[in-house]
Length: 219
Image (cartoon, rainbow, N blue to C red; front, side):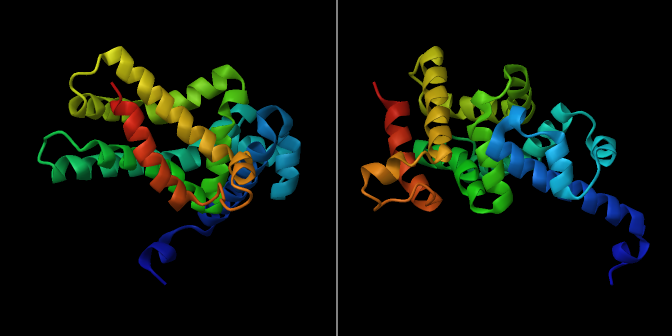
């Protein structure tokens, strides 16, 4: 037993366990049914708690949705920040080659979908456009603005002749491409006659990086 385990009050472990159980269920149900259709009563019941406990830990349904979304999304932005810092160091402050920059931007998002928690986060993200606009804008701004703007500056450095507004459009289109990929609509399986799996995130990264680079750098 570690010193931390010896000195940490047992009550803190119990609280963390309840919170994590609620978040697990909330992520799953919000991802499957969306904000409107996933009731707090259903989440509480599936998590084995009563509504009073759920509201004690997370407050209103809106706050629970934000907590469930941010739980996984923060992992993406932290991975992006680390990747960008590593690339800046590797290239000694010079422009980062476009394929490396694109790969470091999309990989945390795509590969986060390989874990159950990550898949729930990605499914919540992919359907954000169907959620109430004020909620979707708030969570996107809270978690992604800082890293998105940092990457935008690096894209501008490696594509120095591009008009800023054109660059913003292209980065916006890039976000749309990987978001649609995460939806897993079955269209890829249909077009390939079942030969391809839209859940093959390693393959998705390999295919999407050159596609996005060509779009970003097009005349």
